[in-house]
Each structure stands twice: as C-alpha cells, then as structure tokens.
Length: 153
Image (cartoon, rainbow, N blue to C red; front, side, top):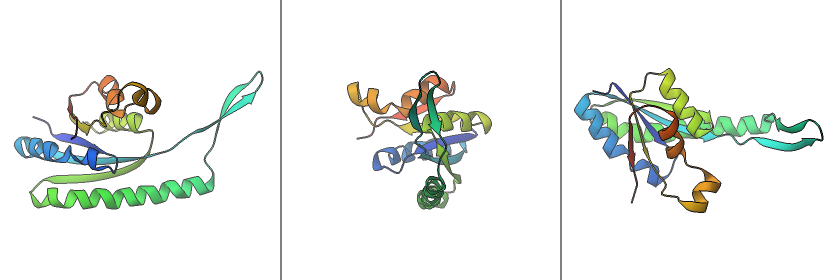
C-alpha cells in the first residue's frame, strides 16, 4: 500500500516510540522506511531600523560549523536506529538535514513521493504547545498525506 514511509525522529526516546509501528507497517506493506532527523536552525531576528522593520541575520561560519556537526551526529544516530530494522529485512534510508522541522518534513515528503508520514507527538498542550509549537500539528495540517501518529508513553 505505502511504498515509502517517512519516520520523523528528533533524538528523543519519545520520538523513537514510533519505530515499532512504522516497522510493522513497512513489513506488512513491503515499504521502504526513510528515517529523517531535522537539526533545528534558529533564526535571529533583529528589531530592525524604524521604517524598515525586522531583519533576519545570516548564520555565521561558527553557526554553520555547529549545524554541520549536528547533522553528522544525527546521521550516526539514524544509522544506529536503522541497523536493527535492516536486520529484520527492511530497506532503510537515513536522512539528516537542517532547517525548521515541520517545514522540512512536509517539503521532503512532497519532493520524494513519500506516501505515509510516521511520527510521535510530545504530548504538549496549552501554553507549552503555544510557545514551542507542534511539529506533529504542523505536519498534520500542511502535508495532505496520510499520517501515522502516536502519543508516546
């Protein structure tokens, strides 16, 4: 049914709880799993000059170096998670990228013909969700694709 399943991970044990569900779905449908980890790039916005509005500052070389190291560590993390899945006979691709998680996930799913997006919520509500946002909510609203969503324990 689903040829490619995008499994969204953020390095947390909560997010990893989606793996057994995605693996079972992949085994049933003979799907390829694509594990993705998005290293967050934070934008620095200045108040700006009166009459010109706020400005977004470009990342410094130090910031770019930090992002590169985070992507490398994310690649190692994804490979560590992929190994047991491959031992079960699943085809697994690992994708470490940098950006804004929700936007990157939706764009990647569109560009790579992903047919199912699997992710775990972090269970925030109220003020926590308002302040930190919700990647799951963003993906649910913007992707237009089937979503396998769990609330981890």
